[in-house]
Length: 338
Ligand code: PEP
Ligand code: MN
Image (cartoon, rainbow, N blue to C red; front, side, top):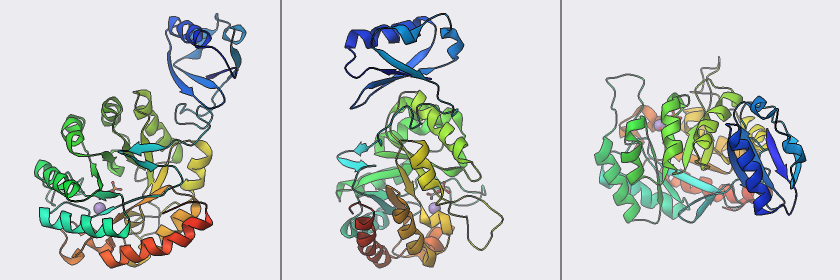
């Protein structure tokens, strides 16, 4: 449930309500909005049955949140969340553009691609150092040395870094190099990893699980939020359906659904969503038209020789450049900027 304070409730009144809730053994999280303060009560609310919170001074009303996720819900936080990554905002008027190879291969490769995508207007370089591969004999990523290559790409450009973290014990290491964690589709329900990222505090792109419902995805976000990290960016990257022509089925329904149910920003990955290079620009444009807050796109200057199989879905740099150019008109049509 959430406790909605009156517009103009005093600091003391808010503190009293929080104290009363804590005394009942429950946790709280506060959202100080423009209109009023909302206090989310986390835990079994029957603990408050003997405590008449409604009649406390400064309290406007109490509202149960029917969804199983609370902090991720629009009821808790009415306004859109805008996440700032070193000055670049995700979830505001400006669209966030993230691009780069599936995996970091060499310093030359990542620096070269970073410079290309920056020149086209991206604000983030993406690239995997730890790769979650389906088979154990496939290239698994260069680990910390790839993180150092990403650091060089950051130094040589004005880009922020996005890279995947796969295990809770690597959160500290990856967090020393990245600006934004990527939590991949295969790990969406790795609850100890979600909790560790929640405790770390850096922003995280939470990819939708391979076959997850929107509710399961928002509950995964809730794990991060409940640990006190409000910086969750959802990423629709396609789900598994009976269709095999494309690698996944990009579920663009998720964009308006998330916008209705949650205040968290949502970006779209048209590369894994389609698995086919020639489909990526169409789905990228559709995602922005649907209201996504940004894109994460695989781009490689030599995709035929990329070290993961994802070359087939990677745009050439000039295609990415053209895409960002074409997106300008779509952005204007939906009240956004690129
Ligand atoms: C990736 O971004 O390269 C990746 C492995 O993504 P996903 O977790 O969506 O498959
Ligand atoms: Mn990939």
